[in-house]
Length: 179
Image (cartoon, rainbow, N blue to C red; front, side):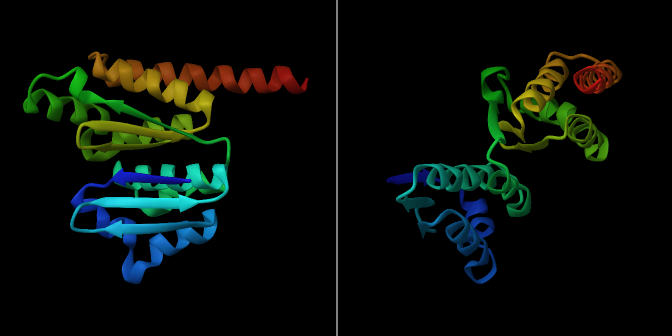
């Protein structure tokens, strides 16, 4: 199998890592061969085994979407994790509106994003025109709903109380399951 990905210029260095260290880790953990054309921003992934190959592509995509390599590597540690990309360009018609939407998700000093991450056990990257989520399917569903609420203009407090309610429900479901 072979796939080529376009990686933005400012993320190529992050993908390669110091002395090729990040690229090497991805190759080792996924049994793939990765070729990077820094000038064109084209990354070629080649592999025999479908699942590790697809994971390598996802990790590269996650790094390209603004995740640090360490955070992107979570995709290699748990096969149940998913990555979902939300494109903001569909809902914003100007750069100013795009900045405002990104700012709502990130919050002052990154606190809103951090709180959503903690309450849903997901990882969120707000980068360029996209918001990318990494987590288990159920967690992503809740985090996505929270992000959507913020994008639609809901107050942060309302979003956090929604997340708290979801967390309580999850705890209750866990208790019901075991008792």
